[in-house]
Length: 185
Image 1 (cartoon, helix red, strand yellow):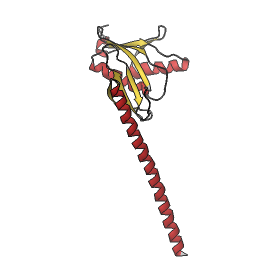
Image 2 (cartoon, one colour):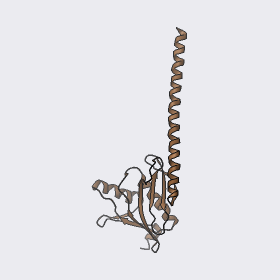
Image 3 (cartoon, helix red, strand yellow):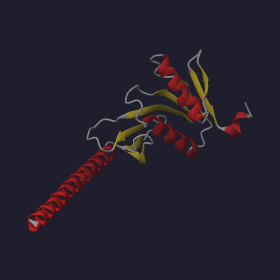
Image 4 (cartoon, helix red, strand yellow):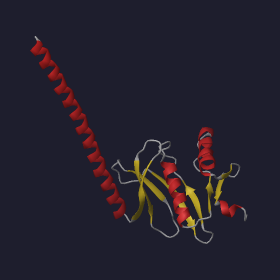
C-alpha cells in the first residue's frame, strides 16, 4: 500500500510537470509565431518604401507596435501596425501635412477605428518626437471624428488634458504651440 501511494504521488508529479512543459511549449510557439509575424511585417513595410521610426509598446495592453511613415516632403503621415497581426494594411494612422514655410504640422485626419487600444497615444507621442526633431513650433487641425458627446469628451481629454492642445469646440479647431513660442503670439 505504501508503494502504491508513493507511485501515485510520483505519477501525479510527472503529470504536473508534463502539463507545465506543454504550457511552456505553447508560450514558446506563440513567441516564435509573433517573431515571425513581426519580421514579416517589418520586411513588408521596408519593401513598401516606408521609413520605420521604431517599435513601441502601448501603455494600455503592452502590445508591441511598429511605427512608420511615408518618406515624402510635405506629407508626414504616421502609421502604426500591431507587430503580431499578419496583415498588409496598417492598424492606425495620423494623416499630417508638414508646412515647412511656417514650420508646423497640420493634422488632417485620424481615422475613427481601433479606439481604446492606445494606438492614438503611441502615434501622438511619435508626432511630438518628430516635431522636436524638426523644430516644429505648432501643431493644429480639426477636432476630428466626432461621433457623439461621449466621444467628443474623450477627444477633448485626449488633446487637451493629455497633450496640452487648446480647443475651440465652436469651430472644431485644435492647436498646440511650443511653450517658448507662446509668449511671442
